[in-house]
Amino acid sequence: MSMKPRVIMAGGGTGGHIFPAIAIANAIKKLNPEAEILFIGAKGKMEMEKVPQAGYRIEGLDIAGFNRSSLIKNLGLPFKLIRSFFQVRSIFSSFQPTAVVGVGGYSSFPVLRFAQSKGIPTFIHEANSFAGKSNMLLGKKASLVFTGTDGMEKFFPAEKIRVTGNPVRANLLHTAMDRATAVRHFGLDPAFATVLVTGGSLGARGINEAIANNLDQLIGKDAQLIWQTGKPFLNQAKEAAKGMSRIWVNDFITEMDIAYAAADIVVSRAGAMALAELAVVKKPAVLVPYPLAAEDHQTVNAKRLVDKQAAIMVADADAKEKLVLQIRKLVDDTALRSFYRTHIAKLAITDADTVVAKAILEKSTGE
Image (cartoon, rainbow, N blue to C red; front, side, top):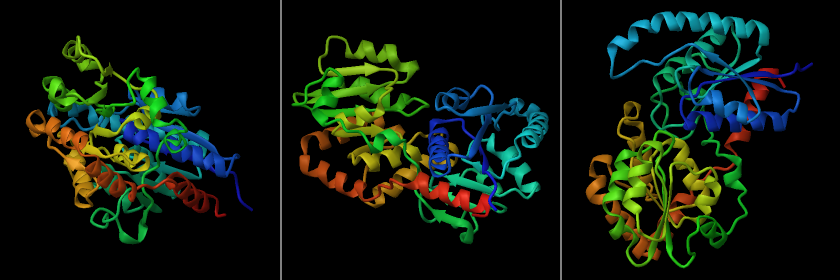
């Protein structure tokens, strides 16, 4: 007899952790509408807003991550960690989970650690090609570890790894909008090559400054720009674009599916989720890894694509000199664009959420 699955999804901190968690939760509900799902995140982080928007309940822990820049801020850590364990214990006793899934971010650590101490099946999804600290510690006792890429045996026990790829936001898989309509949605002209510049949920000063300093060269006679700046850079970007046509600029793009449909070339950070999305939407990309990512994992992610001839990489430190030159190479050469499009498309995985959800349901209900 199989009992009703009750699944806790733990983690967050960035869009790269939250969106895959929501995609997995949706897939679990689709496979088993009876399943109950509860998210646990960190108070004050982005998941506290994004998860309820997706229709799920979330409990917040009083917890803070290890602060790499200020050691004094870490003094309260042990107390917060102990307090979060008590919070986790009371959540578990009321929710009674049959499985716990960690997607990374420091709030997943106390949740999975507690589940493991109670013998509840735990699962990890590691999106990056360089595993995070808490995932590595938790992987030893996890039932299964789902990874976005191959070659993860140096971080996790080989027999626990399932290479599933990274779950992608559903609307990107099913966007029906054609390029011309999408371009017009941004008030631009389908006759020009469209460059989409986006910095991810953490913003992208290195990318933004490179674009702002070389706008004339970037636009030239034949290109146009959809520029997502993030909040801190918006005013500078608007100032730089003043009096220029063929530029759409804003701090955030709500409909990423339309932006991708409009784009001929994408400039992006190299977070695992961004790369998974670029493969699914088959876009030639210039990647500028976020230099402060933990263990510099974005550079590792980007190099993986460069090795497969699936993208171009420019280091953040070189962006001012080289970024716009690389973008212009792609604007000027349609054959080069289709070369990169073909190669990145080969890396697309469209059913990761379902594969992960099935494995979790099998192990957690004994089905």
